[in-house]
Image 1 (cartoon, rainbow, N blue to C red):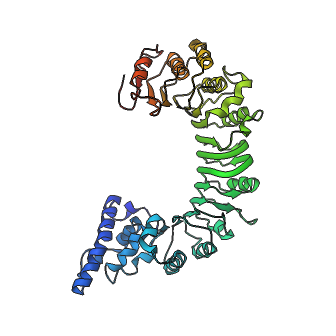
Image 2: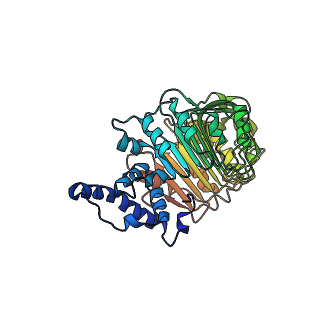
Image 3: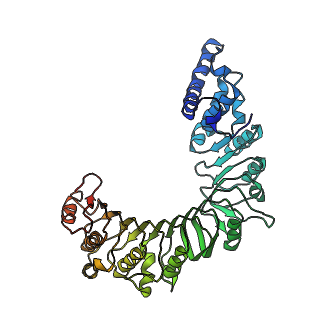
Length: 452
């Protein structure tokens, strides 16, 4: 048997048919088991005589718990499940099998019984803690064909990964949660790694930068709550997506010509007030030639005030098409002015999304926005604007009025009212907004249910 080839290439049976057959097998297992108990015999049928290629694909469509259940279909099916190319120990496995069984013994037994290539191994059962058995399980995995590896530690200490994990040279997807990440000195890289997802993972920043540079096929990188990093260095020629949540004081992109989507949020506000932080961040992002989508927390922009805000920056995000600014405080002039500065410094911007964070009414902010002239900067490419958690505060209304008067190509202004602050579903707010002048004759103002 050869695993891993596309299911649609086997005969004329498509993926939908395989899923249908998988359901038949899964549900038929209980029927066959009841039949055996009541009659003492089994009847031959289509399922018992399926070709090996179809059996492989049926098992590939089933969760591990259902694949194991096929062992009661017939004598021929008793050990078919041991060739499953994917072993996923998750919530459903926990609910189906564990009971009084010990997880460690069960996983070890399944791995020992497994035959043939293993493409995916995932361990993400609830409330799982680090323990020495994990390393033993990793030792049982075939390092010559496993492509997808997930280890999710839910509670307790981080698990220090064994060196053998870094010898899985066929890995394409690596997801680690609450682990200690430290490649051995002899590590030469994972040439086929495409997706790397690390959450609450401890690593040495310098070592991690070297690890990234030795994964030339990496396309997606997520780093979530992985501690404080002084300098985050990204050297990944095929990287297209980057998401970061945590703390860094600087970021550099040495070789990322394809990086198109960047999401950056911070778990601490203190360091973003450091001198030059905001400008250096935008400067690093401006060096990405393919950057099209950017998500930032709005308060990070306050440090731009010393570089010409609310006018244009001395640098531009010339390729940026989509900008999402979250947690924007419409009570702070510095934050609003710097947001406008970034918007004006993105000449190709087509989509703008603002998630508001407004509690108090500050007249000074509204006065500041009323003083802005749309003639100073015509947003000629901006087509859609989405304002979320909109409360209708005067500063928010003036911000929308400025965008309507500036965006000559605007097609849609979408307002999502803040349910806790707006009593009538936003109808009165939208009625007022539709009276504002619009630079674009095609611009519509809408909410989630009604167009104006």
